[in-house]
Length: 112
Image 1 (cartoon, helix red, strand yellow):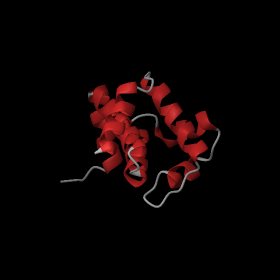
Image 2: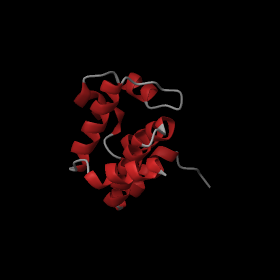
Image 3: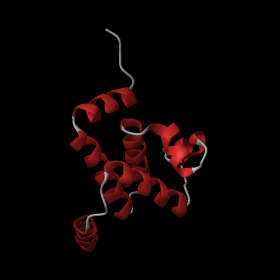
């Protein structure tokens, strides 16, 4: 039985259930705001694989796709400017804006 690459599986699920992609993006943003940068970057990378793909992200940001992939890798270290630009493109793709409830929820979790 052939195996399916992880990113292809994510894309197939996101194509069937658009809510799934939205949840990945929300989880990525929540992780980043909670100080879990490694988790947030990897979730953001999964979101890109599941939706627009790195070539399109590259086109929209004007940055080299390999550099974007590296920035969102496990050992990536994107600048804040690059990270927020990536998030902005992803949010535009989803047609969402930052929900104040996400920030409030993160703030309450951090207060614990």
